[in-house]
Image (tube, rainbow, N blue to C red; front, side, top):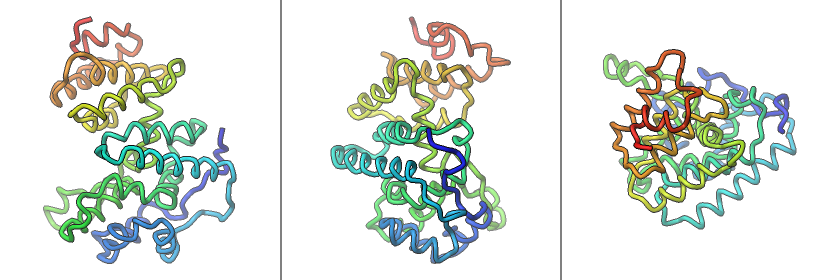
Length: 283
């Protein structure tokens, strides 16, 4: 297990990072994210020119090996699945991050760590996943904002901006790209079955014309508290792997029904009860 004391952390707080990197605040950052994010070395140089770096300069060999393994496995994944739509590879990416980063529980919410490795090791992955039609100049600004937001876990406060053009952000740490992959892997990893759920769902959705992103969005916005995250996995099996094809509304309603029970009474309910009463599946 990696040592929490040795994990890399970024030397700037959120407010500083926003001021230094936001494409909405500084127009030159549009080029930084839509263009220079395609080359990790060039991007890192630009970050350091802005004073963004490690809190200290010490390297951690075990972590470096883990990050190198992740990069190499991602290269192979993308090469072998060049014809698959990017969102359909989310669970494969989640498995790669989760199995290579064996972290103590306290480290899983160390967001300075996740921001650092997203920016300094995996910005090319963020660009690959979230940009749209980068060859079109009219998309450069939108892509820059998307890549920046997914690197720092930020969303623009659109209501405030529409009202008086004030630029402010909502912090959503689960949107930090590397952390997003890792927590998906952690939610769906099972102590007994291992990566069974990740593998089965990934295999199914590579060949089906259906949206996996809707499910992941609901999973992000809900607290399905239970031992070994069993409720998350039961919901995944019910909604994504069962014979029933869920609409976005049916999916949302299933999560809402679970969260409506006071004190999470279904936390320890039998699996068939959750499927029947929460996901409305005949079992």
